Amino acid sequence: QVQLVESGGGSVQPGGSLRLSCAASGYTRSSAFMAWFRQAPGKEREGVAAILTGSGSLYEGSTHHADSVKGRFTISQNNAKNTLYLQMNNLKPEDSAMYYCAAASHGSWYFWYRPQVYDSWGQGTQVTVSS
View 1 (tube, rainbow, N blue to C red):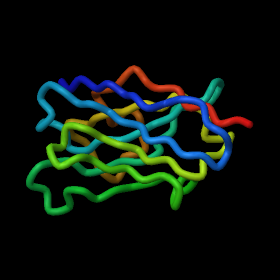
View 2 (cartoon, one colour):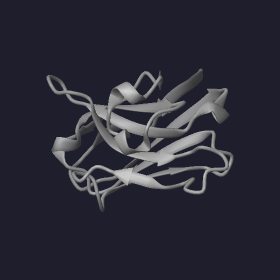
View 3 (tube, rainbow, N blue to C red):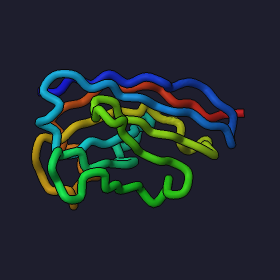
View 4 (cartoon, rainbow, N blue to C red):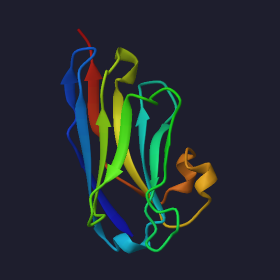
């Protein structure tokens, strides 16, 4: 199983930017794809963005972004593929939530937005957007 640790959350004014990081350790080569989710109080956990990480895949590096964050958020990974990032620009108050990093060892890339697809989760990092 993969161990995941998020960092980079904080408080920012509307229109500001943050960059979240997720350090992965353990058997990282077992991950087929990784994602960022978020959960606000009283709401369901929702998929924000995902990236195909499976080594050797023809489509390695392909991404999905939720419609609500397209053009503002960008998911990426470093060359060693042991750190996942989420660059968040033009933040809005509705982006406030706990953000989680997740890894899937298998499953359909088509269902990247479903939490049940993922078998490893980080503890989360809080993002608060307010004036």
